[in-house]
Length: 592
Ligand code: XUL
Image 1 (cartoon, rainbow, N blue to C red):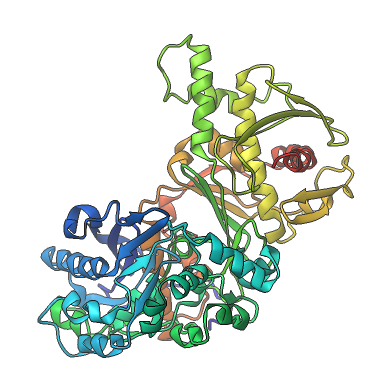
Image 2 (spheres, rainbow, N blue to C red):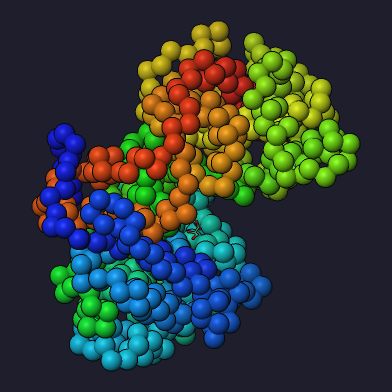
């Protein structure tokens, strides 16, 4: 494991023309990205499952049967051959690839038969036929892998939570409460409903360890960070929880290969790939990880840095050394930084909720004229600080929300700015421009209060006129207001479609209040790129070419020119939102 050294900026002493590959095995496609030793993207190829492999008849990469959503495993094997043959067709020098890693959809599971090891071992000898020939149906006890979109495990989720005394206990143990898609409940469902399949299963992989196993030509253990997406791994103890394993069945521990892998390198790429595609026999495989985990590796994130992905929904990822789990979000072991975690908060209501207000505003102001996709009026309202709205707060959840866990609702209130108490619930504010400002503010404020317990003290002076002993409740956390007044991220990075909207990111940046800057970047490749960086750092560290930890390595070598500095640190604005914390807590208490 890396030692934390404090050397100056590193320069990487490498022979010229070394390349690193990052796979991204996601729901709809397999991408493979190559970077050079300067971290520059030099090549990319993609296989789209529905379009390029139509014989599997998937819809957007999956089979849907009611609540059950699965992917054909053989399709992934064919996609791997296809994406690498595209590299060969493009005459990319795969012999110069020093290391590979990658990103895979999280939670999905692959059920190998007792013949799997023998069949995989053929990949160490032969390459005449295709992967699906060697690793054919006989290698699997089940030909499909449950997909993260599956929601057929309500019963098993209940059993998981009951087994350890409730959602809070499960979150304390495994970093998350039970979720339909999490692999433990998925495996339990198979053990209960398909006992023959479970019996025939010798080994269970996550999608990430499946791909690593194929690349090295033998079964490898789960990657530890991705194993935190199973509701089975005791994060503090760093081992599978025996009670939960017992709930699934006695042999579940053996099927999961005992314990996850902690090594940086899983092995060398096997002969199949060297003979068929010209990889170098020394090419190292660093364990693939989950896609969100790879995403945090794609940016130079250090402890107390936050990544806000503004898409249809909003996702917040952050790096922390505080193990503070909650049933409302997820904690995973960090894939490349020892003693650190990745926090992940998933909101349902993001862009769509903002678009709804934008459309209403446009309709009202334009007298029905069609200018619906135009953000001009909305953005003016968001940045208009002349409004008399310091005592207004609104939540806008056109879809049921995950954080807080409530049904679809819109609610607007007027509060007392001194006490924070809600004075009145109102149907409407003075006009709809207030909603534009309030929706962005409350979305950002929700992020701020949820990340707060995961951040270090920032030693900033803040609002003195508030009663700092007032107890504030968000989800399962109850603490004095004081706890929220001194916790600020160092840097916030904005990605995703809506991060292109200047007003939205500016407001989020003001409310979240990073102390060392706010950045934006356009990253269509983040998962695969995280895989490339993981491959590169793991290889260099493992072969003693560098001694610095991953975060320093990436900060020193990151292509910063791709990053836009969007706004400076704004202490005054941040301070203003302190008065809205108690009212938000009070407002959320009234929702169900
Ligand atoms: C995370 C999750 C999704 C999948 C998508 O918990 O379920 O982000 O990883 O690929």
